[in-house]
Length: 91
Image (cartoon, helix red, strand yellow):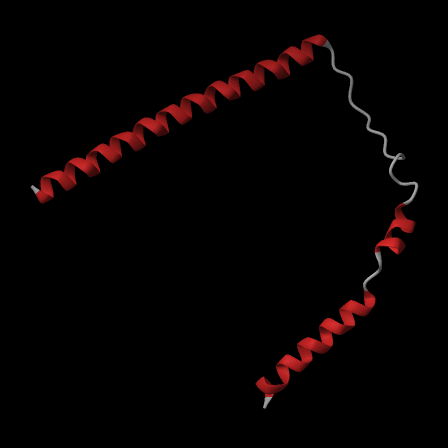
């Protein structure tokens, strides 16, 4: 009996959610005037600090590039081993 009334409960719940929903015009009235009020403040960095951050980014990019090359070579080696193994198995 419990499973037969389940779809009706879902329909009732969905209807109650539709009644609570605001229209686009109501939402727009709530947000009028908020668009221009956000001001971003950035920390001023000295040229030395900028260079330090730049060096860190470049070093990280080099590490990432080396890692990607190593993983590519490892995967190529594994692929060659698998192909060679299948060749030996079926020949």
